[in-house]
Image (cartoon, rainbow, N blue to C red; front, side, top):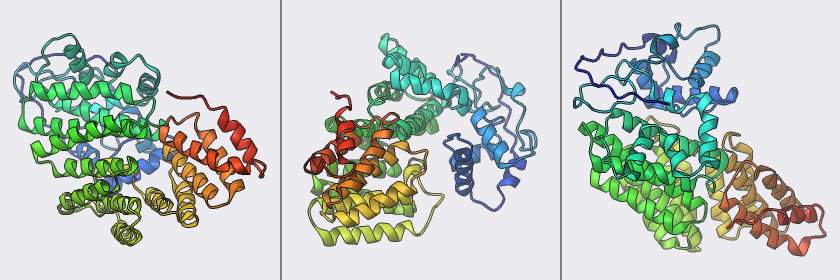
Length: 468
């Protein structure tokens, strides 16, 4: 993924709108069309992080040729058509072009052409590189590999490590930072947090080094602040899910501070959302309620019912931890009512995980905390059944929740069967949260070791390697 450092006084050629692609979208909103793209990707085993912004960039002509993953998805969606039919340029006409500076400060480092324009996703999200990047995060040698996998972010990290000044950031660095956030979320969805946290911390350090170096435009500075805050939340979540609660709290606080410095309400709502979740898991339910309520105050003007639904669920989790059944039920009712309003163009990109399965899963956790095992198991089973196969980590989580609820509800044979399903997934998923839940289920099932299937689960669970 080599980049070129070229200066030029030549005026950039303005992008030409992709009218053919716009016609194919028809009456669907950009967000609705992006959702259709993601569904089509899953049908053919691809995974793309398409959102309304990406669709807008395509239609504006900023993306002249999609990366290989998007190409396969688009050709699957519109059989019989070529890329040219979809309004794109041929790959040969954009591949290998050197970067040119835009109207930003002369000499600015631009790792790819942002006007003419080669898609940044083509550098960071193509099919051939995705497996390399996955291996780099999962098994690679620490910061060096993580940095090398993220292009301009990696260059900033290399400069920081060598004590050299970091160049002022342009749109290339902002785009790389945004893609780093998407990539980390994608890998977490598939594999869980444990193998990612230490490696994801490296690009986070580079992101804040870029902020300190400054940007060439205010719009770029805003994107950098937003991207750095979202990356801090993503890294915080990896710490959170792998049981490093103090680290997670620090990262979430960093994101919250970044949001308040820049007046970014969307980022602030996200930071409060995760802070509430962490407080619940850390045994601070009253703090969870306060953080969730603060998030709702910030998020209400943003116009996303799905975001308000998730934040109401965060509040419900806090009320459950306080053993306040009435407060929990009221928050759950609000969450359901907001959810039923459907999707919106205002829904944040990071909420791609939040669908009916997550709604059911979080409600299951509330009832479990309140000790209503039968109701908790019912919702956990729905969550596992509804979950998109792409979210392997969540399937493991919901099934582990189901196993524990069944065990505590006096149904050891069903609990053992669910536990065995989770054990099958642990080859793909590295999540301390899931392992902790399975360990608790095993303890509950010990007195029932003679029940059908329980001994098999306990024996296989005992063979799990110990983690530090």
